[in-house]
Image (cartoon, rainbow over all chains, first blue to last red; front, side, top):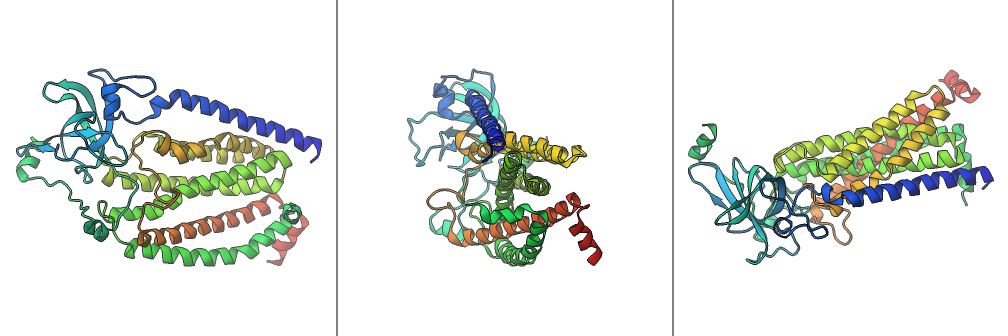
Length: 175
Length: 245
């Protein structure tokens, strides 16, 4: 390689390395803020590295798995409450896991079910019976990266039924 | 070691090489895409929770990974153009940018159309979606710079620098779902070990992916050919070519 090319290679190479280092540092500094949501354990115990904890009344997003058996729907209207626990593999739910209750009024996404990943957007509050909870204004479904043919899933006992609503419940939304 | 590449630095040789490549690429692309898309959209089994909406996967994932792949190829071209001042490398980068931008747009649009029924929202500012949007802006910037100067060498240099600065975004897009918590799910196909899909869902994907990659090859070859002609319009061999047609 002739000296001019060598020089250009050095310049371009150092630009690339410099940008790599700079963006690495920026992303490291911002890493806590790039997360889309808090997990239930981060809400109750604070973030792992910084101990940063959301305060009551703060508007936050929470993401977690719907704890089986915790979904309570009001038969009269669209009010629903459920508990979320951390998304961790393998999926096991223990009573000792940190959990946060989510209260929501509205139509749930089609993918909502027990054990499903959910991201909810709302205000952090303290409800006397359930402890820390979120008054959600938006509930989104977070599905995982596993796709399974319907027949195979059924054979394995995995079935997905989306939530159904009675006329009465839907009526309550319009009023 | 790179001796066999040397003749292709000549625009005329490259032009005729692309000409020879094109019919093969087009035929293969047509075969793979028609098999892959028909298989994926009509015959592949529906997902247990997403039903038929899942089929958007077969277009969304190839488009998204190609949007990153094309950018990486463009960065390699920009690098060699900056260091070795290969004029053809500039021409190829200019040929790739609009194709990459289109595939990024396809990935974003199909993603939004998939997100609405499944997640419940068209858009969310999570790390994956935001970094992919930044990729679109990078492509638009590169296209704009290629067209901003009368002097093609200067344009190539400016666009090349932007391309190299932006290449840092590619690993960020790729690993955003692992580094941060996002609404977007993790990767299905490129997981080490076994992909999180059954084989009768994976095979149509492989066909679609190869088909779309070949399609990208065809479009880039067509654009590269035009780029060579436009940049060498005063050369005798181009005049000869035009006269003979």
